[in-house]
Length: 459
RNA sequence: GGGCCGUUAGCUCAGUCUGGCAGAGCACCUGCCUUUUAAGCAGGGUGUCACUGGUUCGAAUCCAGUACGGCUCACCA
Image 1 (tube, protein in one colour):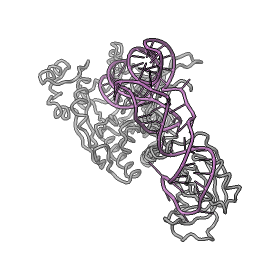
Image 2 (cartoon, rainbow, N blue to C red; image 1 turned 90 degrees about the vertical axis):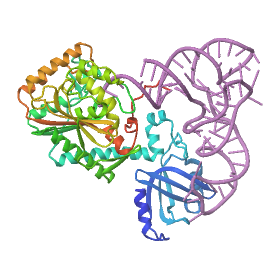
Image 3 (cartoon, chains in turn green, orange; image 1 turned 30 degrees about the vertical axis):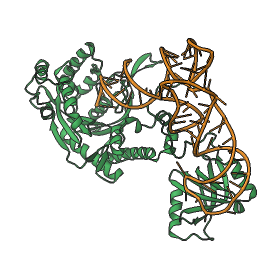
Image 4 (cartoon, chains in turn blue, yellow; image 1 turned 135 degrees about the vertical axis):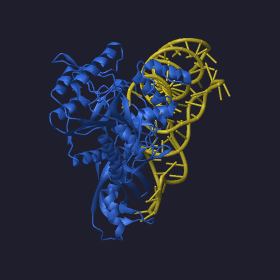
């Protein structure tokens, strides 16, 4: 409203007969000069200068203004527009009213609010003082809208599936556990939406997506947050190649719509989101990254021997797939700056992905990397219930072995698959990480309005 | 969970090394000022120096513990 008013005043020469206008907003700056005052009020759309004179609001009114109105208060003013000496469109106030009083002051006007803890705990103050913070969250919201629009236009149906689940699954992570009193049973906060969305594919909803929070019981870092927003998309009669095309088009379209450009600047990099994105197989990527051809080293022992021969400094993992992943994360991932699909993953770290044709060790899976950040995960969905059972059994053995992130056996999911699932492409990516890239924020906590903090004793 | 650093006025920060009356700017309060915009001028300090204990004649300052936070490593997407 304030911005619209300012625009309205721009075209015309403000005059004495200017119409009476009303505006409301928060007082964000005040300059008192005796019997006249300049101030700025701000609402969600912008800010406008107001000008109060004792001879226009009356002696009593002006005395009240000086005595009771402070920075931070919400006021309503009525008056007409004019231009000051410096050309700023300003509302000359004929009457004002207190809409809401602020008892605590705003953050310091020049330095603003920089204390990171206060910025997160009292995000409302951060939003008031830091325009770029506000902008980040506006962009985040618009990105989500653009994603919805993109998918809706292509016939996808947005759905909602359970957050509280009797068996968690769809990802490799430790879950949060909670308890249902009436049913007297433990439930898990979901670590992904995957298995429920695929049940909908089985049920004939051929194109579905869900945007929601997943919960993973892990540490926090600049890239991780225990509660994060993920979108998952499933399309029947498609495979992972189709999902790559969908991904690059969606990310590019969202950037164009929200930022007006297909290129984003992130830290020191200019990232070009224009399709098609680079595609590289896991095998080639690791070969280029550290000189080991993982296809030639068919088990974990052989792989470790190669690592030792080459003197590579890398953590040792329990199985072949995890060791491959470790090599990739150490020697390849940090260098993947421009958007890249890394394709064809080891089967033993992909219990829900379909095997590549005539391959025993590889699945049709890709992950999305931008600016060294893992942004998403997708595959041709495993739709063979017999194969699925074997995968779960193997995962369950690891779980029993002490790997807390292994996938638990899920009989109900196998039962669903036994009723038949069409070939399907599935995709998931993090909205938070996407927002980090699109708003140039290096920490995930800067794209989450109220990030997790240790609870503080009542003060 | 480990390592390093931090916590002083409502906010942004000095002061801690080398113990000696608790400081500055903004905000706030008082007075002046009818086109200012980090308004200006004159005056005012509003404080559990995170908390608990110790050393000392004396602790914001030195020591120990606790809480919370930041960075980072580990874990993870």
